[in-house]
Image 1 (cartoon, helix red, strand yellow):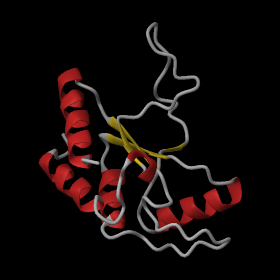
Image 2 (image 1 turned 45 degrees about the vertical axis):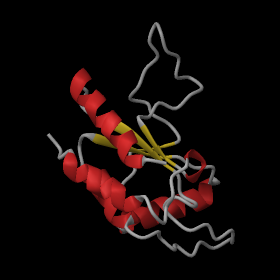
Image 3 (image 1 turned 180 degrees about the vertical axis):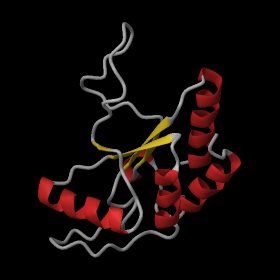
Length: 141
């Protein structure tokens, strides 16, 4: 996956449409953390993941959405750990900031501009540095 291309397209569209922010959906396993498939998470972060996630969550022009299939108990643990690490997610599996329009219905589809998920082709062991690099190309307004 060319994550740089995805972010560049999102930022360029933001500039063109004069949007306040872009929405980034981020999966946990095999994206932020190496999947452990154990009851107790090992929190083995991929290289540069924490740095990139901190930069994303510090920006006011980016809304971070945690995109996960976790059960509520483990989800609360993940959110607490991410906060402890300086990473804040605005929403979990939802985006209440985007309403339906005459052309679009978001009742059953999450709206986001960039998706970071191994299922989308994101490679946690390689792509986080590219996220950091593109954020430097597009500084916050």
